[in-house]
Image 1: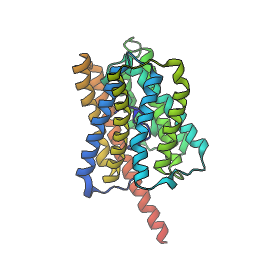
Image 2 (image 1 turned 90 degrees about the horizontal axis):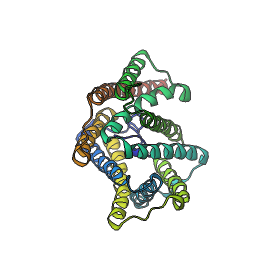
Image 3 (image 1 turned 45 degrees about the vertical axis):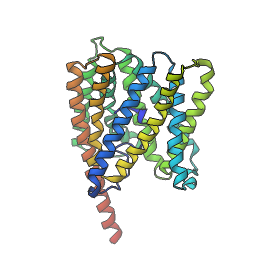
Image 4 (image 1 turned 90 degrees about the vertical axis):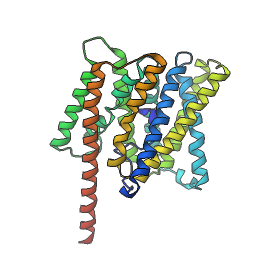
Length: 317
């Protein structure tokens, strides 16, 4: 799974832990579907990126992703959920998210799809590390160890000093870091804001910001490419809703590991469309990252359960 490409969806670490294991099968199927859709969108973005500037692709991605999301909000009659008293927080989240999305799309143009997806697996590591200074959370020895192991996986993939990726690797890591910052923003915003509001203001900011810049970068698309650009946004919006439904259907610890199936799709698309196959360092580094990421997710989930039980016991006293 890629980085801010998943934009407003609450990440596996941040998603509300409201699901139950009774719906585990449903949650897993929904997650697999969401990742398949997002992977198709990633491949489509890479396919059109040679002919159209990043600003234009992001504009179509943001504008048409807004339609399925708005449809669901209107259908459920949740207009009141869009009210907010924290526009500054939404603006910060939106701008950082837009930076992550644009950086990721830029890297998609030049990097093999599977390589970029593998690097994006570092997001949970950055979230855990950033939660210490920005949220005041305590991280124990086990999670620190998982973090260090995960960053070793990143180093294996980018091979510093080898000149394999160079600046592109730094941009990809920067995009992943920005995505982690987005998730910290979401964690703070979710204390007072609804998911609908977080989705709405991010989409609105992205459309407005890229729309203002669009006249300076506009390249008139051919009709087939126009359809593909529209499809990129629609698929992204539907995938976002599907992933949110997956986290609601089952617990985070059950659903989250299936996010890593993005690597399977990235390899398939990369090979069929561009003849790319990841090198040994990508496979090894991705395996290390996935292992550390899954451990962090399970550790976060277990700690969340313990905190909830402690809070209930404290309330009874």
